[in-house]
Image (cartoon, rainbow, N blue to C red; front, side, top):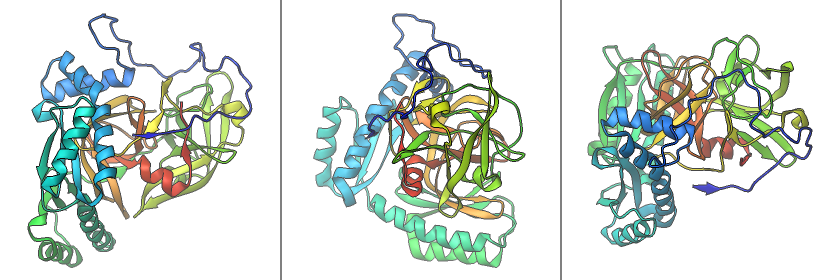
Length: 411
């Protein structure tokens, strides 16, 4: 994970703003039973454990064990990612084998380093596999393919999509199931087969992807945090994490929300609708889906590194296949799911996005912009999903922070 410096607003209006007595009209998830034999989990971790137990057909106790240790496992993966460099070929949490960490490397000599770092983190069941292509190579393959997909999708009724599949050490190209491809799309498929050879997997997808925004009514008093209903011009989205740059504070959300409205406000329980501010910067297209809204009055809003109601976010990390993440959205509330794809190229109506992450979480219109997280770690900004059934697409927080030029506000 990436540790963050604590940051607090310079003006303080309410000394008790962080107290339990905060008033919000959104419903919080139920608290745990308080059984002394049950590990202490946050509300989001409880939700993640419940989803994991259902998905993997394991006991609640086993699901809680996996959720509690997955942050430690992703810490190991991120440390190895930085230490191994070009020898690192990806990592994932293997839920089919007890939720253990698997690390792929391109040289067998790297195995000793993986074993030493895993033992230090008390994850002795970590396994290592030696593969042909590094993560950097897979990312370059994905970038080349994404560039051609985006061009070919411009005049197509149904888009091509792709993703890096670290478990198979390949890039996967997804074709719309049962749909006719354009000549340009056929050319991309043939180019990918010739160029990547056995490094390419060709598959299909059933449901088109789309961003999620809508209208509705929710109310929550300050502090400003992730998971609130936010309103633009005839559109509702959700707030993501808070951020700062210099003396300015920002509310993060989805770029497609910012494209639809330049000014955003939040309906509060005690003070009616209150303006947050104007969009300072956003992107919605090839380079992802993220935005920042400058907070005009941080003294009133008291931005906090929280997810509704008061889950503290203290750091950020990369996404790894197999881990469970959650979001608090202004339509569907808390939902959680397993990350299934990273560095994905996604076809939305009228544009193609690259570098996105897929998970199995359920979401709906109005959830766009929600902060995606695991425990106290930020992972992304909800962008959209399939037009039928569950599935969540999010913008990785690492890219959103870097591209918008801001620092995540720690809880």
